[in-house]
Image 1 (tube, rainbow, N blue to C red):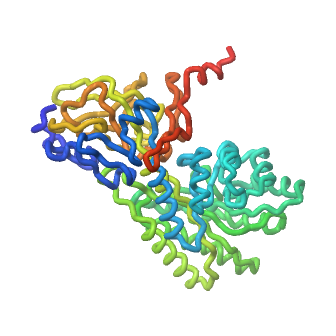
Image 2 (tube, rainbow, N blue to C red; image 1 turned 180 degrees about the vertical axis):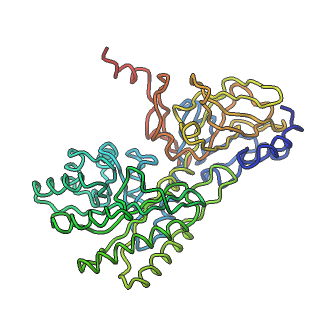
Length: 461
């Protein structure tokens, strides 16, 4: 693809196209809000993170590798903590969790949201305070619930009548009184700027508000008198850029709070409005800063409580992607470049859908840059693809890269901290990459690279 052809193609691609149009003058430029905060490009064109060059990281740890900017991750934890002052901020471990991350979250004063026994085991192994853990999940087993009770997990979010029965029986057996929230499905699903207030009761999570199941769940917990009902929980979606969907959700959940007060004389002391706060994957994304989210959500809750003459409950939120996502980029090495004349170049890297399934699974958009050198070449339209035996093995659907991109170049893809390592697989028996944390000129492995010996160790045939 010739550089002079790129402008016309960029216009044709429209909203779903590349994150920005590179020109010979900006082909090496970084878009700051897509990258971890300590990432800079030197005069030689080489990216550094936390004071360490990507060339050194590739030499020491190999590629592909997830590179975690520890200063950035910690700063985002603090921003949510400080913005939601007086509230509980639960880091959503499903975005990305390992022992090192759990310790960072604890040290920065956040709580931790886990949704399986495996995530709970990581948190406990890291020494995370159990009373600051919330346990989610739509099908928690008896073993998982028992472990949560025995460990003293601070909040268990109830998701079904079967689970109420299971946890009640465990609590009686253990002579315990675990704190619980009831997850309410409020008929709101928010994704970015859109929300639809109907037809979203048809899902596996929570108790339907409109159908009366949520009120029945509250009644069952209160009448049994075994579990300590602290409040209600709502989660409306993901990659949310403003608070409009939360306004509808809060109004409906607080309506149930008022009904509980009127019927049982109980004012529930807590309200968890979930997470789903979005990040910038491309320049088309414009997420709200934590301070704006906090101010907007606090205003919504206070106004609704005033209208219903309710005491303002203690608020909790659950950011995951918004903390982990921007703090990580994936570092690849280019293996082959194929020019499809008049269409695009296919730039193949040494990873793919096994380390980032989101493009194939969700049609997610990412950006990319050549990270190991500067280029004087003009832009060429490229598709960054992986090494797996699938036509849909795409990492970045469309991006403008230097026209001289070549085998051996290091390519960096930002915004991969959330759900990439968590959803990684061994498809085609490809070992999963390591996670390397970088801070203050030092790099350390926090999750090691899998090996072929790891894969073979599971094979008992």
